[in-house]
Image (cartoon, rainbow, N blue to C red):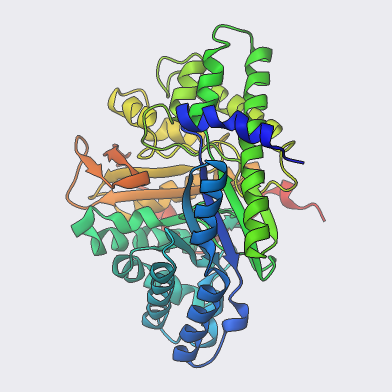
Length: 454
């Protein structure tokens, strides 16, 4: 039972340490919207979303007012659109009309983002999956609030290398299609291995087909809170360090549990999960890199960084799972370069490279996230980076993802400004040795031997 004492205890964290609830996300099933007529399908989608989520923004503001807890984003995720559109879409252009409908829903409701312009192709692609994937560059360049994700691998099925190769091409096309805005379309596109069905965080959120008709998922944050707590135990041993992170994660997650419970009751929608990830922002002091440095690193990327991040991720999960009835999504620590001032500083100082970030993704929540690379980077090189990250997820039975932004017209030494929570980023160098022959092989990489557990 959550009491007012716990709420009051968070006031200092909110006011001084950048604590916030990053998002309330309503997941909505669109399976009952399917129709063979494209116009009717789009009408059904608009009606379903705007009916189910009509009070989302209002309720979010009420909770903020009543408990003085900032709720940064109100979002929606939907059933993967490749599935929903299969009843009516005959070409990629048909799928683009659904993207426009989703964008209109988001604008009508006043939410921040809508996710689920997605396809799940870890073992193979239907023609409808391919239609949606090929429509992504146009869909993301012509809409403002639509986010897209494609799951190309899993521990159970292996890695669909045909999809990996295609996604390299699609990311380049998306960068070109939105080059007038520094290739911003790519910031709304994620490639996954082992994508969870209940992730509230964009750009990878979608409402899995195993989910209920509608659910409330909440994502909490709070890197600044953890860093402040660690400052008080500076120099102590690892046991004290771990206990401090666990206790702080518990308090942060309790805030999310409170918000989820209130939102569920007010919206009359079942509570799904709390995602207890530490999601940084560009705000000073709200940085995962800052936590790593407080643990004892001169800069994120120094020797010991992967170990420190593993420790942080594990203790956040251990503390958080005791604070909520249901924990899911990604949960742990995010390392998006453009959204974390400490990560940006580490890149500028030469402490953090793409290769070191890849090593860090073995032990963090997601993967290579919000990384700006030269616009001249080849599609096959992007596919090779995706393949590496998918392999980490597949072998380690964890979610991994890639959100690379090849910024057209910019090169190493330049900086790109995305704005808002997306922040800004220095262009990072990419290994330019070719992987063309590897990427252009057809088929899929088989599932690892430890995947066979039936």
